[in-house]
Structures are given as C-alpha cells and as structure tokens.
Image (tube, rainbow, N blue to C red; front, side, top):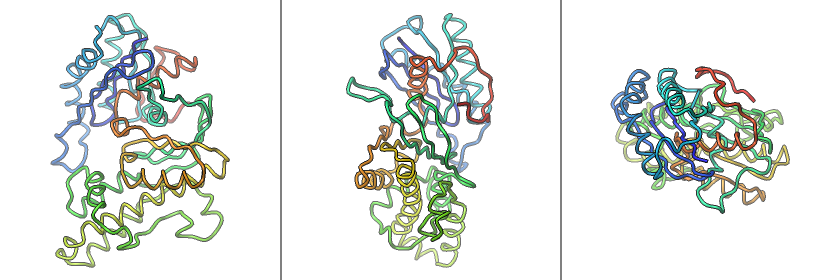
Length: 345
C-alpha cells in the first residue's frame, strides 16, 4: 500500500510516501521567512505553504519512484495547528484525493508525534506492541500520556502555561540568540557548565517536598522564563556574553531535568516499562542523553525518533494513518477542518 502524507500545521511544508508501512520518501521544506520576526507569522506561513505544497508533494512522489495514480491513500494533518496553514494542506489533500478517487484519512498532528518513535524504515523497526508513556514536547506542546496497545491514550499531564520548546526559544531570545533558539542553546550547552546557575524547576520534587508535587505530572515553564529574565538584568552584558555557554547549559539543564523526572516518574507510577519521547524538543541532545541514562537505570525501554522525525514531518502523518487503517480504528473521508479541536480518542 502506498500512502501519501501531507503536513502543514505550522512552518514546515512536508510530504512523504510510505510503501507497505516503510518510509520511501520524506520531504520537509522549512520556512525561513519567519526568522527575522523571531517567531512564526501565521499569515506568512499559509502563503508559504501555498507556494511550496505542489513542488514538495511532487518531490516526495518522485523520490518514492511512483506516480500519483499509484497512491492508495492520502493522509493529511487536520489539526491542531495554525488554522490557515492546516487548511492549505487539508484542502489540497481533499482535492487530490477526489481527483485520484482515493480515500482521505485525517490525522491529528499531536497523535502523529506520539507514535513517531515507531516510524518504520527497515524490517527491524518495531511497531508499538505494548503500553508506553509518551512525552510529546515541542514549541507548542508539552504533554504526558499513557498509551495502550490499542492506540488509545489518556493525558496524565500537560503544561499549565508555556511549552518546553517555547521556553527554549523565549529564553534564547532574551540572550540575543537567533530564532529558533532551541538548537542554538543545545549547541552552546556542549561548551558550558550545566551547574553554573540553578534555575527553577517548577512542579517537581526538586522544588517541593510534598507528595502531591511528586505525583503531579503537569509542567510549568513560565517561572523559568521570569528567572532567566531577572538573571540577565542583574548582570552586565559583558558578563552574560562571557558566560553565555554556561547560562545556556543551565537553562537546558533546568528544562530537560523536569521533562526526564516527570516522564520516568510516570512510568514507575503506572508500572509501564516503555517510554517514547517525540516532538521537536526530542531532538535536543541533552534531553536524549538524560532520558537514556534515566530509563536505563530503571530498566525502561526508550523509543526516540530520528531527529528528522522529531520536528514536524509528513512521514509521521502517513505512518499513523497506515497504523490506524491496519488496526481498523479510523474511517477515511470523515473529518472536519478543526485545527484547535480537542483530542478524539
């Protein structure tokens, strides 16, 4: 079966082809137009998707060495995301599916991230065959779920204010780093001391001693942003410049420590022996290393997608569509353009 996936939820225009469950192509065009604005501009994102979508889909089909008529299913992101951006991809998918006489499968963008750790490239790749704890962490989302073997999931924790990726980008902006600042902080951290300064880690056992906080799987990063801002204003620019790698490493340590602590604690509490980490922040090298160490110590299996599948991409859209079709848990052609709709289990 050949499945074309289309992803346009934010500022990546992506198309991918899965052949019999494995990635045959995955084209991602990241929009550079937003860099000078320090963040994604929704209207510009929609226009860029309109400009790029035809060529990106053509490249994905060509790279898979098939023709559009060889496609069996069209899958597209139906939200959540920027409403204009989502509509570009979903409406294009609707027209393409109608023209080819193929079924259209809508895919929840965050659900696709949840299962992206199981994207198949080789026969040795594993599909989710057991319950696992999912940490989905990106610029717009930070969420913990318990996922069962039937692809059903329960949200047990989420951010009450800012997402972890947003915390990376906003603190990086305070430090004068280019957008997106997350990868820049990661690079600087390799040269810095993570113990240089202890920034706050809200809603963790590190910050509170009561049992209620130890069992709280929600996240909060707004206090970290405030702390970083106060720290910068208390020191002169020369000091900040001199210790930039150390400050970056300290910020990264604060964010990743919270993510690891809560994820592993959830696995222990629910007696689940597998963890999946996905979303753009899962590409962070510090998070990967800390999560691997923590899971190894607890005897927990860890699934993290390749970095190319960590950020927004169409391979995860096509992969989840194929997984749901194989399990009979989705009905093609039934969907709404509802980018901000809640999860539908």
